[in-house]
Length: 293
Image (tube, rainbow, N blue to C red):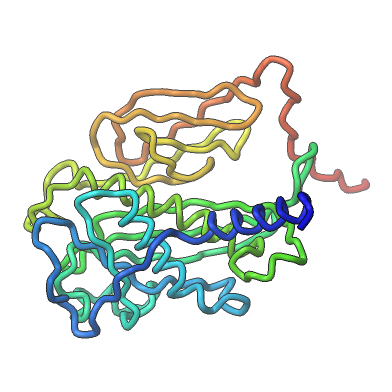
């Protein structure tokens, strides 16, 4: 086997590994309340993902992404135990808005994930075309109350090698997984800061109150990091707790922008980013054509 072939095989294996999480996930019993679940950890139950725009090309993603997120959370975050509710209603099911779902009994938080949109973004200035997937994640407490929400965009180059036969490695599913991976990381960071005592989940402490903050930038497309956690790209409306936070915006070719603030309802943050020395200016949107007189 020649060197080029070995490198190609290794590259394909790495691409698949980046899409899939490590390890096997636990399956939640159909009637809830799993036996043997410890009381000293946060039990996280992940419902089947609403894959929407990619359902026709990758229907298995509904459960596969849920399994991968559960495995990733178990691998990276302590004091939590993740399960996949294979028999639960899909994340977009109206029953989740009607109160507690009986089959989820015993979970500290139920994770609902929905793929809202997948679009092709044209390249420019040497950048390739990309598939962009918008995904929303919500966390529900034992009483059916929403206690966590995040929404962001995942991107993947719109390129697909004919040797990549795995559907999950194709641009659209890969972009969705990039978003899901970042979302579960954000949720894991949040969960690690919550008390283990079950009675603390979804209560009315001030830090549990979230307000929507509009975060924009000139130019757009900057990564939003709140206390170091990725929260999407500009422009976005980000739900944040009412306490001192640090906001950082990062975009290729521009100086990072950082500011400390305390969120307030209706707040809008709209900084202009300074280009790095020698960086090409950002592409401006074309002006609308002037109709003939």
